[in-house]
Image 1 (cartoon, one colour):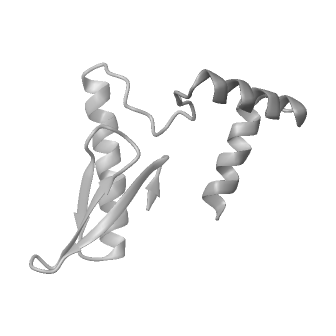
Image 2 (tube, helix red, strand yellow; image 1 turned 90 degrees about the vertical axis):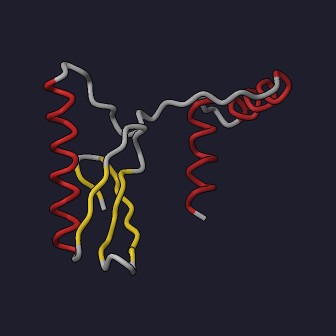
Length: 107
């Protein structure tokens, strides 16, 4: 489930007879629950809106779901080899690595 870029996963609690969800692409805790798909969608929207309103009240920037930037630490030798491979394909190192990751997650 997704709302405004926030992605929620859902699990079922058989004892309670309800579904519980959590937004997974932010470090802040955003949860929601419901007993049907319609309730879950509504609850996710309401929880995200509550989170955004809470941040606004505190004059804080809400954590945005994944910025698209991350740092990977590798050995200098691997860094050099990867940079050379990227250059051989007429791509930037960033583009080359991005394409490799896209291929890997598409499998």
